Image 1 (cartoon, rainbow, N blue to C red):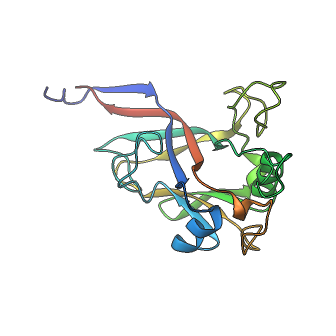
Image 2: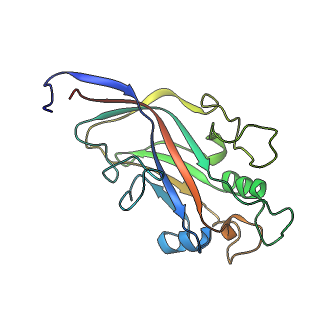
Length: 202
């Protein structure tokens, strides 16, 4: 179907990307394979499934689309609870090590739009409290997330990315038992930019 020239549509469409630790490897091993201190999101989208990303092009929006980022969140998948087995990292400890030992930055066109410790970006998702199985990074409510005071605009064909930096290294270097670095796959760490996409009507 041909595009309708001069007519745009605006829709609520979060964009997301994930750091994936496959089964048989650890968080630290995947970090070392890429960069031992930084995880970059939205820059490597090839060979990822729809569970890991909904971007088609690395670091850019598709076609001539514009995105207004209104909120940002950091989401983790489940970690097996180590209460009965000390060799398995405890999910609460892992989550704490992640959010209190890292800094998250949003960069648009190589310009830093925000840069603060990761605990500023609660996930707004997860299993409801009281189940005793999965700890949440904040309340499991999509509204319980960090919202920008003013929308961050990503223009057409403008590069953007999110970085999670561990200034002192990933906790548990050397696969120290019960730490973030020792988390076994499968494990996913998502960054979600929530906002509005403006695109051509088709």
